[in-house]
Amino acid sequence: MTDSTQKKKYKLPGRPKKRLFIGILTLTTVLVSILLYGIWYIARLGLAEIAEPLPMVVGALFALLSGGAMLAILNMVLAVKGWFYLPFLQRQTYELINVLFPVAVYVAKIFGVGKRKLEGSFIATSNLLFNRLGLKVPADRLLVVTPHCLQLATCPHKITRDPQNCKRCGGCDIGSLVTLSEEMGFHFFVATGGTLARQVVYNTRPQAVLAIACERDLMSGIQDVYPLPAVGVLNIRPNGPCYNTHVDMAEVRAQLEKIIIPKEQDNG
Ligand code: SF4
Figure: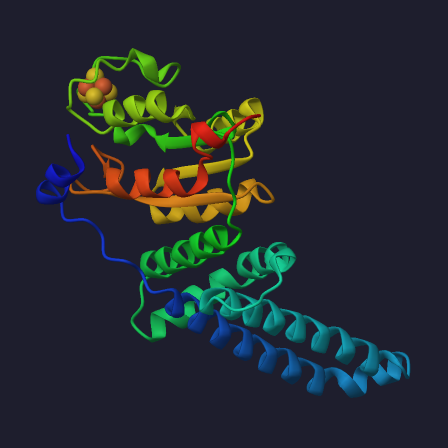
């Protein structure tokens, strides 16, 4: 299936807004900081009875946590705006997201924003941070992983061990991805779950990963493989979750062209 036919056939997902995730995360950080201050204010006299410097130590620790979180968010804003930012703060940012995300989901709910939308916005932000790294890798050091639900459910060919078993009948997007992997030279695997995906990453030792999955799996996958740079492409689910899913091949190709060093420039 060509990219343009695909566009006509499926309703491609709209682009999630990065500012949604950053906005909710900022609000969550402010609320948690206020909560920490409240806890400190109530506990300070009791803490002083245990040891005189304790209120100051606990207060400084809480202030450090809140300040660090704000710095990580500010760094994300700078990156999104295309201004100078500190890429090494990415680990702290992911840790902050891990800790605050469950609270952020509740905060988002108050504003009528669903978890999936918030995760989609995280992926858009994370992809932007990835693209800002300007990373270029040889094709054979890039791993593309997709979930098993991308394969046509009725297809009899076993592609999870070897995608080359695909007959490229056009029934699903696996065939196009196998063809693209041969054309560009990247590693391509179809994983049945997160454990297998992590094992494939471990075995192939790539320099970068492009993952195709739903919001939830991309969100956890991108954070799981860190510090390995990973970019996500959302799948399309015209038949509901985890069943005969699709992917925007034009988006996959565009992202691959950004990451892979063209053959003529790759001397290594
Ligand atoms: S493209 Fe490959 S995996 Fe998909 S239905 Fe055809 S043979 Fe099966």
